[in-house]
Image (cartoon, rainbow, N blue to C red; front, top):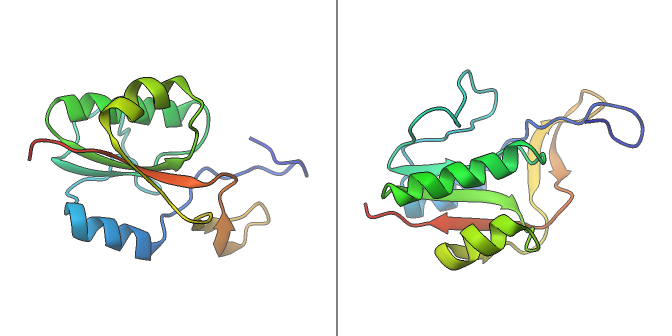
Length: 139
C-alpha cells in the first residue's frame, strides 16, 4: 500500500518491548503466530496454548488473524491481540465484544520498524488508537 507521497508503507512493525514484556509477564506466551519477518504463515498452522498476536494492520490480514484467534480460543487457547481500536466492525461486535476482555491503551503505540524513507525508527505511531483483545482460554 502506498502512502500519500507515493512511497510504500510497511506492514512490518515490531511491538514495543515494554508492552510485550508487560503482557508476557501476565500471560506467559509460548507462541507468536505473526512475528516480524516470519518464515511461516500463522494462519495455516495450529497455535500454542498462550499466543501473542500483533497482526499486520492491513484490511486483508488483520481480519483473518482476528478470526483465527477466535477459532483457536474456541479450542481452549489464550489469544492476546494488539490491534487498532476499530469498534464499528462486524468482527468487533460479533467476535470480540461478546467473547473477549478488551483493554484500551492510552495514547497511540509507537512501533519499531523501517519508515517509507528506509530509516529505522522506534517512534512510528499507528494511525489509530490501539486495544488489547484477550480471548482467555482454559489453560
